[in-house]
Length: 396
Ligand code: RFL
Ligand code: PHB
Image (tube, rainbow, N blue to C red; front, side):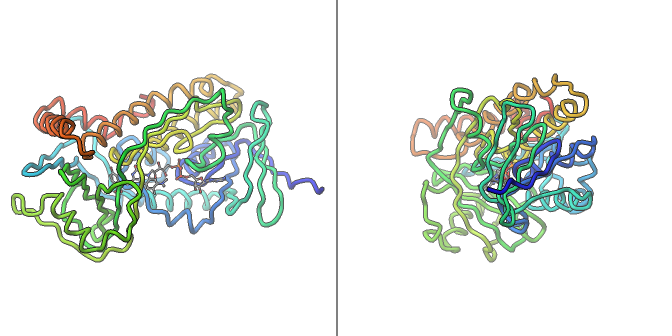
């Protein structure tokens, strides 16, 4: 058997999504080398349609690292969101309440900016890798083996960063007996659409409705992103374009106070299941988990991408100290520090989700409406939502 090609580096990063690419960027800024390995092609990774909202601390971090030029030019800063239910619509102004805004800038764009910055710096990214496996994680010379362009390659580092999302091998590389997982599966999914039509709202609308939740988001001045709550396992073919626009209009409050939803050509349609998942600890030996590999949140609080960025904001300085100064203190604190925010965002996402989605229980409906009225009418209620949605500071 021929021996594998060997690549040596400081940090082996598994996954070229936002967590992995941002981590390689922050490490490089402090002189730490990394190699990124990714199963998909560069084109596939660049085209995935996912999150749309960047919280305040995410934007700050991107700015500090020279990654926010296009975001500042093309992104859209929002002061808050609307909360709606039949006959009611209330603006929650984050800037007034907690002095922080959020930005509408799609994950697709963040990903493009990260890839462009890493390409300009000559970052080594191995795309389209097969059979990615992790080895010797309890040593200080861990390695990742994979097949790339027909050859077996071993990438060896001082540490491995598992940024390979919820389907990658890293989370399972934390041994049974060491890892603990928490999970909540919700009894509904989102049908999401992209439409070539100007948004009918200046800021996002989150709407409770007896037929199910609906949301109006956006990607640009000419592209809208909207969602409808649907039962789990709903075939996308069950929802014609007409049926989608009719349900959106009804649930989002078309006609209330003269507000109108303008339909347009739908360019993408998909059904997304929802769950909460946390795996602890986020470190095992020389393996550090960041982003979706360690936790999944339902999208209602817009936290998935932001949590991935917050993890990396803690992990990068920890790995810099570990690799360059041989100082393990931050690395030893990483899992506990990251999990404080993970659990806060897990709670917030669960809270937003269960407040806004209907599950057919009359008692729950009354509680939801009572909670919505309180959040919308009390300054304390609005401030709690604002503080969590606009994002707590990195390191919270
Ligand atoms: P990612 O973006 O999933 O990136 C992980 C990368 O790892 C690669 N990978 C592997 N690489 C090497 N070897 C292997 N064996 C590998 N297996 C997988 C994958 O191909 C991928 O490139 O995780 P990361 O970087 O942690 O970033 C997290 C965010 O992407 C995620 O939290 C959000 O996108 C979640 N999410 C949403 N969040 C929101 O806040 N709002 C949304 O509207 C929203 N929509 C979504 C979403 C996630 C979705 N997924 C994961 C199915 C919609 C979807 C469809
Ligand atoms: C989106 O624009 O895709 C989006 C925005 C806010 C959310 C979820 C998704 O809470």
